[in-house]
Each structure stands twice: as C-alpha cells, then as structure tokens.
Image (spheres, rainbow, N blue to C red):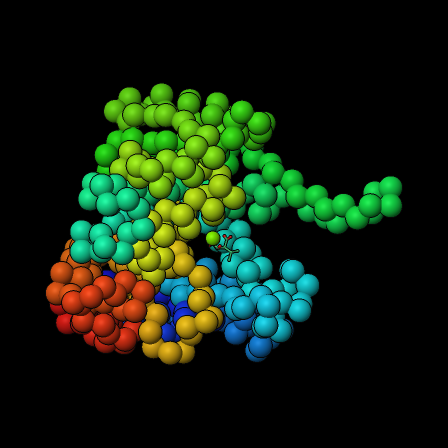
Length: 362
Ligand code: IPM
Ligand code: MG
C-alpha cells in the first residue's frame, strides 16, 4: 500500500495563499511521480483568522495542526501602518498566532538554508568576487525561547514608563538546539559556528558552555564561535566561510533575513521549524509582502522549496524532495524568473506560471 500523509495547510495572509497554491501544485506532481498520496486540511492562522474568529489562532486550528503529519504555511501578517489587525493589542495580532503555534507544537529548531544559485549570481548584492565564490549555509535558529518567550511587561517606575523583555535560556533548551545543529552538520560540511554575544550576555556564556560540551561528542565536526556583530559583518564579507550557524532566537531572526537577502531575493528561501519528533512546520523565510499580494507576481520558489523540505524532514520522501530541488534548479537554468529575480535576457513569468514550469519539470 502506498503511503498517505495528512498535510495541514496554512495559506495565511498577503502573498501566502498564492504561493502556497503553487507549492501544492508542485507537491501533487511530485507525489504522483513517486506514488504516494497527500491530503490537505486548511488551517486558519494570522489576519485571516482574526477576520473570521477575532483571534489569530483558535484552539481548533492548533488541534488540526497537531493532527497532521506536517504543516505547510504561506505567510501571515499585513502592513502594520494601515491594517486594522495592528490596532489590536499585541497578543491578538497576526504574529501572536505564529508564536503560539511554534510554542504549542514545540518547534524549537528553525532551519533556514541560504544558498546562492549559480544562475542568480547577478541578483546577489555582494561584491562580484564574493558572489563568484558562491555559498551554501544553513542557520539553525532556536525558536521557542529567549526574548520571544520571556517575561515581558510595561509599567511605571518612579514616574517613568518602563518596558522590560527578559532573555532567558536553560541548558536543556540550548542542548537540544545544539544537537540539531551538529546532526545537520554531519550531513553537510561538518562545521558549526555558534553565534552569540558572550562578551556581554550571561545567556550567551551559557550557550557557549553547553554547546562546547555538545561539540565534544562530535569529533568530526569543526566547532567555532563568533560574536553576533562580527557575524553580521562576515555574512556580507565572506559567507562561504559558514556551513551551519547555530544561534538563539532573536539573533537568528535578524541574521536569517540578512542571509536570505544575500542570495539575491528573500523569495527563494524556505524554512523548516522542527520539534523532537519528525513533525515540522514549513514556511518561506520571507514575510507576507502585502504590497505585492494578490497580483500574481510573488516568487513561489520559497514556498515550493519549503514543500521539498517537508517531504525530506517530516515525510521521509527524499527522492520526491530531490525531484523538486532539481526542478527548481532546472527552471532557473531555463531562464524563467519572477519579477524579484529578473535580469536582462531572462523570461519574466508570473507566480502561477512559475509553479506550472516547475511542476512540468518533475
Ligand atoms: C520570522 C518572522 C517572525 C519572527 C515574526 C513574524 C514574528 O520575522 O519568522 O522570522 O520574528 O520569528
Ligand atoms: Mg524574521
């Protein structure tokens, strides 16, 4: 009997629905080729859930996600300056739904690969010599701890309004993220760089201590550390020096956008958020891009590669994942480009056409 998987689908807001549509198209083609079945259950999260239910994530939505083998997501959120969602208190805004689902599903490891495709070197904003060298790195971002989930409050101290966000990590939270990073390094170029601010922060000093101990169990993996300000600089100077970057939640948020941009477009980068089992939530690294939503011009490749990561990490369908990765590469070789990665001489295509061309190449 061929395998059948239940996929939760969060289309979300902004460009989410249109790029997820292309990912499902490609997934169906991949499943057909490799002989397995996928069933999809729509799950509301973000602004669309606020519009329907008044909250960015309902308990039913959490249950539906938990009942799935994996969740594929588009993006959530809108323009904070104009959208009514941002008139609500912070705990009721679209982003709160995303943070809650990460926590509820225990998705502590966020994998964000950043690869410069040969074909897109012209779109890379780095110096020519740096772009020519290429790069292929992955950020392992801790996702359920640190500043994002610490105690926070705003109150009046001695007549001054004062806001407090706490950054706390225990050794177990650090250890499990570190194990993920080292396991991933073993399948890549065997190099882990821990990025921290150990010259200032106690939490960073604990990250160093715990990660150094974990590293001792991986004698084949080279381990080094780098301060986060330097890492921000090194990413634009010489990204080829990195293989696996391990870092805490907030640093990972910032560095992963930087690492995405140096590939030429944030529309190319997938991401996986994993828990201790094989379950994961897969989403593009980029945001909801409300400025281009609904115009059929967004780049669906990040969503399509997120689907490929889902096949690989949660469903054990490595061959189908390889098929998709190859098809994406092929479509770039054949000169198809969405607006964000377009350069002269290439064929400019819309979102749905890019999906069709990739599906065709499976
Ligand atoms: C991300 C996003 C989220 C984060 C926002 C939308 C809360 O920027 O996934 O990187 O900060 O984690
Ligand atoms: Mg971010």
